[in-house]
Image 1: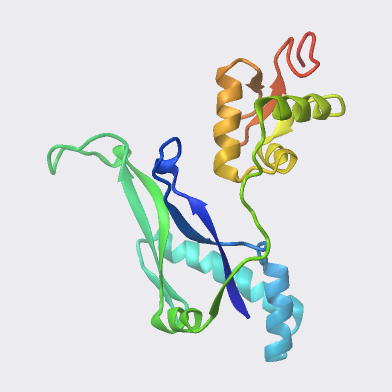
Image 2: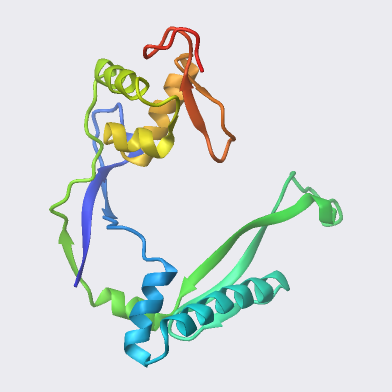
Length: 207
C-alpha cells in the first residue's frame, strides 16, 4: 500500500517564465459508506446492515452535537468542530447581530495515531498522469460541437471528462466560454448546466 503523487504547476506561475510545481495526491476514487460497511463487517463480525446503520447513526449524532456547539472527538480519528463567518464586516464587538453570523464549514484535525499511520506509508510517483491534456481552442470547439450533436446540455463534470482537463482548468475554460457568449448556464450557481448559444457548436436557435 502506498500514496501516489503527481506534480502540478502552481497557478500563480502560469503565464510566466518562472515555473513552479507542487506535489498533489492522485485520487483513485471515493470510498463510500456501503464499501466501508462491507469491509468493517469482515473485520468485526457484525452484519453489513448493522455496520451501515451504525455509520449512518454516527453521522446523525455528529451533526446533532456539532449543531449544539460541541466539538466531537473520535478516538484514533480526530476532532470535528463547526466554523462560523460574518456575512458583513464587523468593526465593533457589539456591531454584529445573530442574523449576520452564518455557518461556514466543519473543520477536522486528525489524531496523531492517524497521522502516524499515514506517515508510515510509502510515497510513490503515479504511473497515471492526471494532468490536463493540452487542447487548442479549435480542438475544444470540435469536441463541444460533436457533444452537442447528441446532447442538449453539458455539465462541468461532463466537460471535464470530454476534454481531459483537471477540474480547475475546466472551470476556467468554461468561464471563458461563458464570457465569450458561446455557452450559457441554465442551471444554478452550485449545479451549473451549460447549453450552446445560437450560432455556436452547431446551434442555430439555442435550446
